Image (cartoon, rainbow over all chains, first blue to last red; front, side):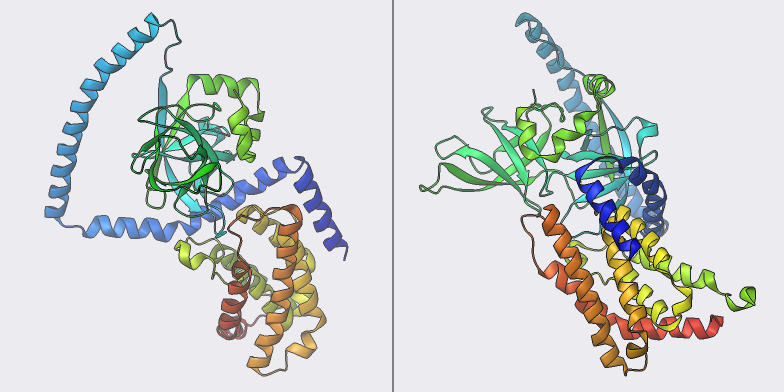
Length: 282
Length: 165
C-alpha cells in the first residue's frame, strides 16, 4: 500500500516538476545498456550477412559506391563555387554569412517499444557533446531531434512523432509552414491557406526558424493536397525524405551558434515539447 | 536454514531481466502493439507459485526500470506492477489450483486491471497521442493470455529443474 502511494507521488512529481529528471537519467544509464543488449541479435545478423556475402557481390557494391562517390564529388565541386558565390552575394547584401555545420556519425542502438511514439536511441551522449534539441540527419534529409541525453547515449524524437513539429518552407517559392508528425510515416503541413501555391511533389526544406534545425536541409516531399472550401486551410500531407525506418547510421549536426546557445541557456528543451512554441521562438 | 532455503534466487531475477529485455526488443512497427506484458506475466508466475520469493518492493524497483525504459511517468509501471503482484498474492490460493484455461482467464482479469490503470494515468496526464486507439491496450492482454500457458509451463520446468523453492 505504501509502495502504491509512493508510486503515485512519484508520478505526480514527474508529471508536474522536473525534479526527477536527474534520477531518470541515472537509471537511463543502466537501461540504455539493456537496449544495447537487445541490439545484439541485429548486430550478429549484420556480421553474418557480411561474412556470407560473396566476393562478386562485394566487388559489385564497391564498383557502385565508387561511381556514386565520383558523382557526389563532381556535385561537390560545383557546390564549392556556389557556396563561395553565395557568401559574396550575402556580403554584398550586408547579411550575416551562413554558419558552417559539423556532422558526427552515430549508430542507432534501440527503438522505443511504445507503438504510439517514434523514438530512437543512439550511441552518442553528453560525453560526445550531444545536447537537447540537436538535429539528426541521414543521407536523405532531417530525421528528428535529440530529446533526452545520457552520458553515452541519447533519445531522438523523429519528425513523424505526434508530438513533433518542424518549421519548413517550400523550396520552390519559400512559402513557410509547419510540418507536424502524424504518428505514421507521413507529415501534415499545418496552416497552409487554401489559395497558397503549394503542389504535389514540392520539396520541403527546413526553414531554420525556431533555431533548433539548421536551415536548408530537405525534410519531406508533398504527397497529397486536399482543398476543402469549408475550411480556411488546405490539408497537405508530405512524405519524409529521410529513410526513417531504415537508416542505421545517422548524422548529428553541430552548428557553432547552437553550441553557444546551449552553453548560455539550457532550456532549449522547452521548444520541442509544444509544437506551437517552435513557431514563436526567434 | 535461510541459505539453503533461498537458493536459485538468481534464476528468478534472471527471468525477470529477460522479461525486461523482451519488452524492449525491436519489433516491426505493425507487431509492436501486440507485444505481451512480459514483466507482468513473469511477476504473476513467481508470485503465484513461489509467493515467499517475490516482494512488492522488487515489483516497484523493476517497475521504475520499466518506466525509464519505455519513457512513461516514473511510477506508472511501478504502480501497475505492485498492484499486479498484490492481487496475485491475494488470490494465489484461488488461482493456483484451477485448470489452465480458467487460470488464464483469472490472470487476464488482473492484466485488464493493470491496463485500465495505465489508460487512466495516460488520459489523466494527457500523455496519449492523437491517433490514440483503445486496441493498443487490448491487444497486449490478448497476446499475454495466449502466451501464459506456455510461459507458465516453461517457468515451471525451469523451477523444477533448478530446484528453486
